[in-house]
Length: 261
Image (tube, rainbow, N blue to C red; front, side, top):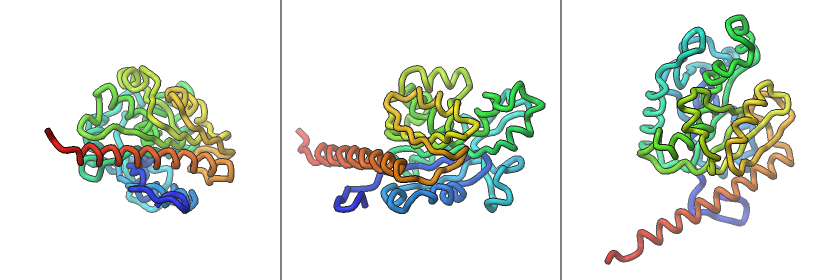
């Protein structure tokens, strides 16, 4: 159901990609910080990453296991594996569970996690490290561009919308060249924490989108609660999504009903 006094054919449907070494269930809990009036307007599908957690999770003691990760990396953070398998897994899930209108991604990383690797990195906020541990948000932010260039998701409908919480850009040179070579026209909503130590990387991602909607909040690297101003922006964004979904479905029905010559 849409906003009060209005009905729509269906809710915008999103595939939700959790952060590093968490799970779909954990992300579901995190997103429910948002008001029911927001959550109830979206059709959310929470997916576990394809690989079991292969190390300590930052959320141990906060959320119950099991934990999962989207791909893996070496000790030096110079190489990662199973990225292609991750894309294949996501596309397969989108075929079986979809169609989807968009993606929601969150990166789950604590300052402690980065601090623990400080000795082996040039700086705490190593771009290579970020490329690996901000998995859910990086995937969601980069996939529309990869799809547009024919690199990923060629068997599923176009990703029309993305919602990114604590994002950053893909740093693999080859992937980044395809993902961000031109300004992304995908409708996007970004949450940027004013005290988030990863804020500069989220800003870089935002600059890759043509008309991003940005919600600034006073917190750090977290799924924020929505104050009155933030709620107004999020509500307006969902209004736009509902309208576009309704128009797309209406056009699809009209094309289907046209007699064949």
